[in-house]
Length: 409
Image (cartoon, rainbow, N blue to C red; front, side, top):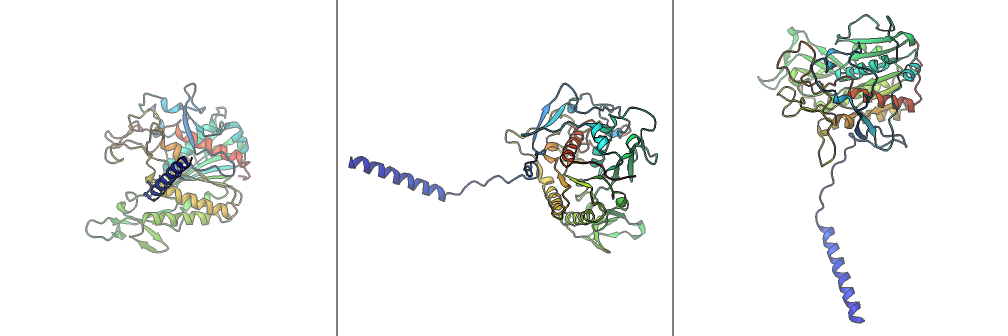
Protein backbone atom coordinates (compact mmCIF):
# COMPACT_ATOMS: atom_id res chain seq x y z
CA UNK A 1 0.00 0.00 0.00
CA UNK A 2 2.78 2.38 0.98
CA UNK A 3 4.64 1.53 -2.22
CA UNK A 4 1.53 2.29 -4.32
CA UNK A 5 1.03 5.66 -2.58
CA UNK A 6 4.71 6.47 -3.13
CA UNK A 7 4.37 5.67 -6.86
CA UNK A 8 1.28 7.89 -7.20
CA UNK A 9 3.04 10.71 -5.33
CA UNK A 10 6.06 10.41 -7.60
CA UNK A 11 3.85 10.52 -10.71
CA UNK A 12 2.05 13.64 -9.46
CA UNK A 13 5.38 15.33 -8.74
CA UNK A 14 6.64 14.53 -12.25
CA UNK A 15 3.40 15.91 -13.78
CA UNK A 16 3.66 19.09 -11.72
CA UNK A 17 7.28 19.54 -12.78
CA UNK A 18 6.37 19.09 -16.45
CA UNK A 19 3.56 21.65 -16.23
CA UNK A 20 5.92 24.10 -14.54
CA UNK A 21 8.42 23.76 -17.38
CA UNK A 22 5.70 24.26 -20.01
CA UNK A 23 4.57 27.50 -18.39
CA UNK A 24 8.11 28.85 -18.75
CA UNK A 25 8.35 28.07 -22.47
CA UNK A 26 7.69 30.99 -24.85
CA UNK A 27 4.16 30.98 -26.18
CA UNK A 28 3.23 31.40 -29.82
CA UNK A 29 1.87 34.91 -30.40
CA UNK A 30 -1.89 35.19 -30.58
CA UNK A 31 -3.27 36.24 -33.97
CA UNK A 32 -3.94 39.98 -34.10
CA UNK A 33 -7.56 41.02 -33.65
CA UNK A 34 -9.47 42.02 -36.76
CA UNK A 35 -12.05 44.41 -35.34
CA UNK A 36 -12.84 46.27 -38.54
CA UNK A 37 -13.53 43.34 -40.81
CA UNK A 38 -16.01 41.81 -38.39
CA UNK A 39 -17.41 43.77 -35.47
CA UNK A 40 -19.28 42.71 -32.37
CA UNK A 41 -22.98 43.20 -32.08
CA UNK A 42 -23.87 46.39 -30.22
CA UNK A 43 -26.26 46.01 -27.32
CA UNK A 44 -27.93 42.89 -28.66
CA UNK A 45 -28.42 44.41 -32.11
CA UNK A 46 -27.76 42.15 -35.10
CA UNK A 47 -24.18 42.41 -36.33
CA UNK A 48 -24.72 42.74 -40.06
CA UNK A 49 -20.99 43.04 -40.73
CA UNK A 50 -20.30 39.37 -39.95
CA UNK A 51 -21.68 36.58 -42.09
CA UNK A 52 -21.30 34.79 -45.40
CA UNK A 53 -22.38 35.09 -49.02
CA UNK A 54 -25.01 32.50 -49.91
CA UNK A 55 -25.68 31.41 -53.46
CA UNK A 56 -29.17 32.48 -54.57
CA UNK A 57 -29.55 31.05 -58.04
CA UNK A 58 -33.34 31.45 -58.17
CA UNK A 59 -33.39 35.21 -58.56
CA UNK A 60 -31.28 38.30 -58.18
CA UNK A 61 -31.65 39.88 -54.73
CA UNK A 62 -32.78 43.23 -56.14
CA UNK A 63 -35.72 44.12 -58.37
CA UNK A 64 -33.87 46.26 -60.91
CA UNK A 65 -31.63 45.40 -63.85
CA UNK A 66 -29.21 47.15 -66.15
CA UNK A 67 -32.17 48.75 -67.87
CA UNK A 68 -32.49 51.13 -64.90
CA UNK A 69 -32.06 54.54 -66.60
CA UNK A 70 -30.06 55.95 -63.70
CA UNK A 71 -27.00 53.70 -64.02
CA UNK A 72 -23.62 55.05 -65.05
CA UNK A 73 -22.40 53.26 -68.22
CA UNK A 74 -19.23 52.22 -66.38
CA UNK A 75 -21.23 50.04 -63.98
CA UNK A 76 -23.30 48.21 -66.63
CA UNK A 77 -20.99 45.23 -66.91
CA UNK A 78 -23.21 42.95 -69.03
CA UNK A 79 -23.79 45.69 -71.60
CA UNK A 80 -20.04 46.24 -71.63
CA UNK A 81 -19.32 42.62 -72.53
CA UNK A 82 -19.35 40.57 -69.35
CA UNK A 83 -20.73 37.19 -70.34
CA UNK A 84 -21.69 35.80 -66.94
CA UNK A 85 -24.20 37.15 -64.42
CA UNK A 86 -23.05 34.98 -61.52
CA UNK A 87 -22.07 38.02 -59.45
CA UNK A 88 -25.76 39.01 -59.19
CA UNK A 89 -26.87 35.82 -57.51
CA UNK A 90 -25.26 35.98 -54.09
CA UNK A 91 -27.13 37.01 -50.96
CA UNK A 92 -25.46 38.29 -47.79
CA UNK A 93 -26.47 36.21 -44.76
CA UNK A 94 -25.46 37.66 -41.38
CA UNK A 95 -24.34 35.18 -38.76
CA UNK A 96 -27.05 34.41 -36.20
CA UNK A 97 -29.72 36.74 -37.60
CA UNK A 98 -31.45 37.72 -40.84
CA UNK A 99 -31.02 40.78 -43.00
CA UNK A 100 -34.43 42.36 -43.73
CA UNK A 101 -35.37 42.26 -47.38
CA UNK A 102 -35.30 45.74 -48.90
CA UNK A 103 -38.86 47.00 -49.28
CA UNK A 104 -38.69 49.88 -51.76
CA UNK A 105 -42.28 51.01 -51.21
CA UNK A 106 -41.85 51.15 -47.45
CA UNK A 107 -38.57 53.02 -47.81
CA UNK A 108 -40.23 55.55 -50.11
CA UNK A 109 -43.09 56.08 -47.66
CA UNK A 110 -40.69 56.52 -44.75
CA UNK A 111 -38.73 59.03 -46.85
CA UNK A 112 -41.69 61.08 -48.02
CA UNK A 113 -40.91 64.84 -48.02
CA UNK A 114 -37.30 64.10 -47.15
CA UNK A 115 -33.74 63.79 -48.47
CA UNK A 116 -31.13 61.03 -48.51
CA UNK A 117 -27.65 62.36 -49.24
CA UNK A 118 -24.53 60.41 -50.22
CA UNK A 119 -21.27 62.36 -50.08
CA UNK A 120 -17.88 60.90 -50.94
CA UNK A 121 -15.85 59.38 -53.74
CA UNK A 122 -16.89 57.41 -56.82
CA UNK A 123 -17.45 54.27 -54.74
CA UNK A 124 -20.08 56.31 -52.91
CA UNK A 125 -21.54 57.12 -56.33
CA UNK A 126 -21.82 53.35 -56.87
CA UNK A 127 -23.91 53.12 -53.70
CA UNK A 128 -26.02 56.15 -54.61
CA UNK A 129 -26.91 54.78 -58.04
CA UNK A 130 -27.78 51.44 -56.43
CA UNK A 131 -30.14 53.17 -53.99
CA UNK A 132 -31.81 55.22 -56.74
CA UNK A 133 -32.45 52.10 -58.85
CA UNK A 134 -33.63 50.03 -55.87
CA UNK A 135 -36.20 52.71 -55.04
CA UNK A 136 -37.14 53.35 -58.68
CA UNK A 137 -38.15 49.71 -59.04
CA UNK A 138 -41.26 50.50 -56.95
CA UNK A 139 -42.28 53.59 -58.93
CA UNK A 140 -44.57 53.15 -61.96
CA UNK A 141 -43.00 54.38 -65.17
CA UNK A 142 -44.11 57.78 -66.33
CA UNK A 143 -42.69 61.08 -67.44
CA UNK A 144 -41.62 63.30 -64.59
CA UNK A 145 -41.99 60.74 -61.79
CA UNK A 146 -38.19 60.57 -61.28
CA UNK A 147 -35.88 63.28 -62.63
CA UNK A 148 -32.62 65.07 -61.92
CA UNK A 149 -33.46 68.35 -60.22
CA UNK A 150 -31.33 70.56 -62.50
CA UNK A 151 -31.66 68.49 -65.65
CA UNK A 152 -28.06 67.19 -65.47
CA UNK A 153 -27.26 63.91 -67.25
CA UNK A 154 -26.37 60.85 -65.19
CA UNK A 155 -22.97 60.86 -66.92
CA UNK A 156 -21.98 64.03 -65.02
CA UNK A 157 -19.10 63.19 -62.67
CA UNK A 158 -18.34 66.55 -61.07
CA UNK A 159 -20.28 68.49 -58.49
CA UNK A 160 -23.53 66.84 -57.53
CA UNK A 161 -26.68 65.13 -58.79
CA UNK A 162 -30.11 65.05 -57.13
CA UNK A 163 -32.73 62.52 -58.26
CA UNK A 164 -36.23 63.67 -57.29
CA UNK A 165 -39.04 61.16 -56.71
CA UNK A 166 -41.91 63.49 -57.53
CA UNK A 167 -44.68 61.24 -56.16
CA UNK A 168 -43.06 61.41 -52.72
CA UNK A 169 -41.54 64.92 -52.74
CA UNK A 170 -38.30 63.15 -51.92
CA UNK A 171 -34.74 63.26 -53.30
CA UNK A 172 -31.70 60.97 -53.29
CA UNK A 173 -28.58 63.09 -53.81
CA UNK A 174 -24.90 62.47 -54.53
CA UNK A 175 -22.12 64.99 -53.85
CA UNK A 176 -18.67 64.27 -55.19
CA UNK A 177 -16.21 64.76 -52.32
CA UNK A 178 -13.37 62.22 -52.74
CA UNK A 179 -11.62 63.20 -49.50
CA UNK A 180 -14.61 64.80 -47.69
CA UNK A 181 -12.51 67.95 -47.31
CA UNK A 182 -11.71 70.65 -49.85
CA UNK A 183 -9.14 70.05 -52.60
CA UNK A 184 -7.75 73.31 -53.99
CA UNK A 185 -5.90 73.47 -57.32
CA UNK A 186 -3.20 76.12 -57.63
CA UNK A 187 -2.79 78.19 -60.81
CA UNK A 188 0.15 77.03 -62.94
CA UNK A 189 1.97 80.31 -62.38
CA UNK A 190 2.00 79.83 -58.60
CA UNK A 191 3.08 76.20 -58.48
CA UNK A 192 6.31 75.53 -56.66
CA UNK A 193 8.57 72.61 -55.87
CA UNK A 194 7.46 70.31 -53.07
CA UNK A 195 10.99 70.06 -51.78
CA UNK A 196 13.06 66.96 -51.41
CA UNK A 197 15.45 67.39 -54.35
CA UNK A 198 15.20 67.40 -58.11
CA UNK A 199 12.86 64.38 -58.20
CA UNK A 200 10.23 65.97 -55.98
CA UNK A 201 6.77 66.62 -57.36
CA UNK A 202 5.54 70.12 -58.04
CA UNK A 203 3.00 71.54 -55.62
CA UNK A 204 -0.10 71.50 -57.80
CA UNK A 205 -2.74 71.78 -55.11
CA UNK A 206 -3.64 71.48 -51.47
CA UNK A 207 -5.87 69.19 -49.46
CA UNK A 208 -7.35 71.61 -46.94
CA UNK A 209 -7.78 69.44 -43.87
CA UNK A 210 -9.78 72.02 -41.90
CA UNK A 211 -12.31 72.99 -44.63
CA UNK A 212 -15.20 71.00 -46.11
CA UNK A 213 -16.04 71.16 -49.84
CA UNK A 214 -17.98 74.19 -51.03
CA UNK A 215 -21.16 72.18 -51.57
CA UNK A 216 -21.14 70.81 -47.99
CA UNK A 217 -23.79 73.38 -47.06
CA UNK A 218 -26.15 71.38 -49.28
CA UNK A 219 -25.63 68.27 -47.12
CA UNK A 220 -27.19 70.11 -44.21
CA UNK A 221 -30.79 69.24 -43.47
CA UNK A 222 -30.55 65.74 -44.95
CA UNK A 223 -32.74 63.18 -43.23
CA UNK A 224 -30.14 60.49 -43.94
CA UNK A 225 -26.51 61.37 -44.62
CA UNK A 226 -24.12 58.62 -45.78
CA UNK A 227 -20.44 59.61 -45.92
CA UNK A 228 -17.54 57.68 -47.38
CA UNK A 229 -13.90 58.22 -48.27
CA UNK A 230 -10.70 56.19 -48.46
CA UNK A 231 -9.48 55.45 -51.98
CA UNK A 232 -7.93 58.89 -52.45
CA UNK A 233 -6.00 58.74 -49.18
CA UNK A 234 -2.75 57.41 -50.61
CA UNK A 235 0.53 58.81 -51.89
CA UNK A 236 -0.44 58.46 -55.57
CA UNK A 237 -3.44 60.80 -55.18
CA UNK A 238 -1.77 63.22 -52.80
CA UNK A 239 1.98 63.70 -52.43
CA UNK A 240 3.11 62.03 -55.66
CA UNK A 241 0.46 63.97 -57.58
CA UNK A 242 1.66 67.23 -56.04
CA UNK A 243 -1.31 67.63 -53.69
CA UNK A 244 0.02 68.49 -50.23
CA UNK A 245 -1.82 69.09 -46.99
CA UNK A 246 -2.86 72.46 -45.63
CA UNK A 247 -4.27 73.66 -42.32
CA UNK A 248 -5.23 77.31 -42.23
CA UNK A 249 -2.82 79.14 -44.54
CA UNK A 250 0.10 76.82 -43.88
CA UNK A 251 1.07 74.27 -46.54
CA UNK A 252 2.94 71.31 -45.05
CA UNK A 253 4.87 69.09 -47.47
CA UNK A 254 5.88 66.57 -44.80
CA UNK A 255 2.54 65.74 -43.14
CA UNK A 256 1.98 62.01 -42.77
CA UNK A 257 -1.11 60.71 -44.64
CA UNK A 258 -2.50 58.94 -41.58
CA UNK A 259 -2.21 62.10 -39.51
CA UNK A 260 -3.79 64.12 -42.32
CA UNK A 261 -6.69 61.65 -42.49
CA UNK A 262 -7.22 61.96 -38.74
CA UNK A 263 -7.29 65.77 -38.97
CA UNK A 264 -9.82 65.62 -41.82
CA UNK A 265 -12.11 63.41 -39.73
CA UNK A 266 -11.92 65.95 -36.92
CA UNK A 267 -13.22 68.55 -39.38
CA UNK A 268 -16.07 66.27 -40.44
CA UNK A 269 -16.88 65.49 -36.82
CA UNK A 270 -17.02 69.16 -35.86
CA UNK A 271 -19.40 69.78 -38.74
CA UNK A 272 -21.57 66.79 -37.82
CA UNK A 273 -21.84 67.99 -34.25
CA UNK A 274 -22.90 71.47 -35.32
CA UNK A 275 -26.54 72.49 -35.40
CA UNK A 276 -26.75 71.72 -39.13
CA UNK A 277 -27.82 68.10 -38.59
CA UNK A 278 -29.89 68.11 -35.40
CA UNK A 279 -32.06 65.07 -36.17
CA UNK A 280 -30.38 63.42 -39.15
CA UNK A 281 -29.47 59.75 -39.34
CA UNK A 282 -25.71 59.79 -39.87
CA UNK A 283 -23.70 56.95 -41.37
CA UNK A 284 -20.02 56.80 -42.20
CA UNK A 285 -19.38 53.82 -44.43
CA UNK A 286 -16.21 51.78 -44.00
CA UNK A 287 -13.61 51.13 -46.69
CA UNK A 288 -14.61 49.22 -49.83
CA UNK A 289 -11.67 46.92 -50.71
CA UNK A 290 -10.25 46.52 -54.22
CA UNK A 291 -9.20 43.15 -55.65
CA UNK A 292 -6.18 43.52 -57.91
CA UNK A 293 -4.12 40.36 -58.41
CA UNK A 294 -0.65 40.08 -59.96
CA UNK A 295 -0.12 43.82 -59.85
CA UNK A 296 -1.75 47.10 -58.85
CA UNK A 297 -4.24 49.18 -60.84
CA UNK A 298 -1.41 50.83 -62.79
CA UNK A 299 0.87 47.81 -63.22
CA UNK A 300 -1.31 45.22 -64.91
CA UNK A 301 -3.35 44.11 -61.90
CA UNK A 302 -6.44 42.08 -62.78
CA UNK A 303 -9.65 40.61 -61.40
CA UNK A 304 -11.02 39.39 -64.74
CA UNK A 305 -10.91 35.68 -63.94
CA UNK A 306 -12.95 35.90 -60.74
CA UNK A 307 -16.48 34.52 -60.86
CA UNK A 308 -17.06 33.50 -57.23
CA UNK A 309 -16.63 35.23 -53.87
CA UNK A 310 -13.61 34.54 -51.75
CA UNK A 311 -13.95 32.53 -48.58
CA UNK A 312 -12.40 33.23 -45.21
CA UNK A 313 -11.86 29.55 -44.47
CA UNK A 314 -8.84 27.33 -44.97
CA UNK A 315 -6.48 29.77 -43.32
CA UNK A 316 -6.78 32.34 -46.11
CA UNK A 317 -5.65 35.74 -44.89
CA UNK A 318 -7.69 38.71 -46.07
CA UNK A 319 -5.67 41.79 -46.94
CA UNK A 320 -6.98 44.26 -44.39
CA UNK A 321 -3.61 45.96 -43.85
CA UNK A 322 -4.42 48.35 -46.69
CA UNK A 323 -7.34 49.96 -44.91
CA UNK A 324 -7.56 48.83 -41.27
CA UNK A 325 -6.07 52.11 -40.06
CA UNK A 326 -8.72 54.06 -41.99
CA UNK A 327 -11.57 52.03 -40.55
CA UNK A 328 -10.11 52.41 -37.06
CA UNK A 329 -10.03 56.19 -37.45
CA UNK A 330 -13.58 56.33 -38.90
CA UNK A 331 -14.99 54.08 -36.19
CA UNK A 332 -13.34 56.19 -33.49
CA UNK A 333 -14.74 59.39 -35.01
CA UNK A 334 -18.26 57.96 -35.06
CA UNK A 335 -17.96 56.80 -31.45
CA UNK A 336 -16.99 60.38 -30.62
CA UNK A 337 -20.10 61.69 -32.37
CA UNK A 338 -22.29 59.21 -30.47
CA UNK A 339 -20.66 60.14 -27.17
CA UNK A 340 -21.83 63.72 -27.75
CA UNK A 341 -25.44 62.55 -27.73
CA UNK A 342 -25.93 61.84 -31.45
CA UNK A 343 -27.59 58.43 -30.99
CA UNK A 344 -28.58 58.29 -34.67
CA UNK A 345 -24.94 58.10 -35.79
CA UNK A 346 -23.47 54.76 -36.84
CA UNK A 347 -20.38 53.27 -38.42
CA UNK A 348 -21.67 51.38 -41.49
CA UNK A 349 -19.25 48.45 -41.54
CA UNK A 350 -19.31 46.74 -44.95
CA UNK A 351 -15.60 45.95 -45.28
CA UNK A 352 -15.57 42.23 -44.47
CA UNK A 353 -18.54 41.38 -46.66
CA UNK A 354 -17.03 43.42 -49.50
CA UNK A 355 -13.53 41.97 -49.16
CA UNK A 356 -14.99 38.58 -50.05
CA UNK A 357 -16.56 39.81 -53.32
CA UNK A 358 -13.62 39.72 -55.70
CA UNK A 359 -16.04 38.67 -58.46
CA UNK A 360 -18.19 41.81 -58.52
CA UNK A 361 -16.00 44.39 -60.30
CA UNK A 362 -16.26 45.72 -63.86
CA UNK A 363 -12.70 44.52 -64.50
CA UNK A 364 -12.06 44.91 -68.25
CA UNK A 365 -15.78 45.42 -68.96
CA UNK A 366 -15.58 49.17 -68.62
CA UNK A 367 -17.69 51.93 -70.16
CA UNK A 368 -17.82 52.30 -73.95
CA UNK A 369 -14.96 54.39 -75.29
CA UNK A 370 -12.40 53.17 -72.76
CA UNK A 371 -9.05 53.04 -74.60
CA UNK A 372 -7.69 49.56 -75.37
CA UNK A 373 -5.13 48.54 -72.79
CA UNK A 374 -6.60 50.81 -70.09
CA UNK A 375 -6.22 49.45 -66.54
CA UNK A 376 -8.89 47.07 -65.33
CA UNK A 377 -11.41 48.43 -62.85
CA UNK A 378 -11.19 46.24 -59.76
CA UNK A 379 -12.30 49.00 -57.37
CA UNK A 380 -15.80 49.99 -58.53
CA UNK A 381 -18.73 47.58 -58.69
CA UNK A 382 -21.05 46.21 -61.34
CA UNK A 383 -24.70 47.12 -60.84
CA UNK A 384 -26.89 45.38 -59.88
CA UNK A 385 -24.31 44.00 -57.49
CA UNK A 386 -22.46 44.36 -54.21
CA UNK A 387 -23.57 47.95 -53.33
CA UNK A 388 -27.16 46.66 -53.25
CA UNK A 389 -26.18 44.65 -50.16
CA UNK A 390 -24.68 47.78 -48.59
CA UNK A 391 -28.03 49.49 -49.04
CA UNK A 392 -29.83 46.51 -47.56
CA UNK A 393 -27.64 46.86 -44.46
CA UNK A 394 -28.29 50.62 -44.41
CA UNK A 395 -32.04 49.93 -44.68
CA UNK A 396 -31.88 47.40 -41.83
CA UNK A 397 -30.14 49.95 -39.59
CA UNK A 398 -32.72 52.61 -40.46
CA UNK A 399 -35.58 50.25 -39.60
CA UNK A 400 -33.99 49.46 -36.24
CA UNK A 401 -33.67 53.20 -35.55
CA UNK A 402 -37.29 53.96 -36.41
CA UNK A 403 -36.39 56.11 -39.40
CA UNK A 404 -38.94 58.48 -40.84
CA UNK A 405 -38.11 61.63 -42.79
CA UNK A 406 -38.64 64.92 -41.00
CA UNK A 407 -37.35 67.45 -43.53
CA UNK A 408 -39.61 69.48 -45.80
CA UNK A 409 -38.65 70.88 -49.19
